[in-house]
Image (cartoon, rainbow, N blue to C red; front, side, top):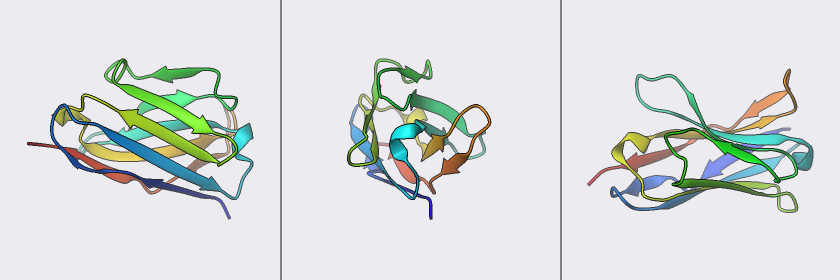
Length: 118
């Protein structure tokens, strides 16, 4: 059974940091590209960051470049998102997604809430 379980969200002040984790099981993690997405209230889900299966290349949404860093551990089957200098507009439900290729399969976690507020 495929599972993606996000954790590490919470309430943080502007300028603060959080590290999100995504624990994967039920599929061959090292063969999948992994992504972080987020969805703010009343907004569409948007791409945040991604990393290919080997971990040798990553990309980011313009809004988070220089502040967020994606990483993965293919031994522990874990995906991470280090978020620094958080802003109010980073407030959202953050999801991890596994991608088996351009046509899938795709697997989603249930998300972890990040709230940036003073």
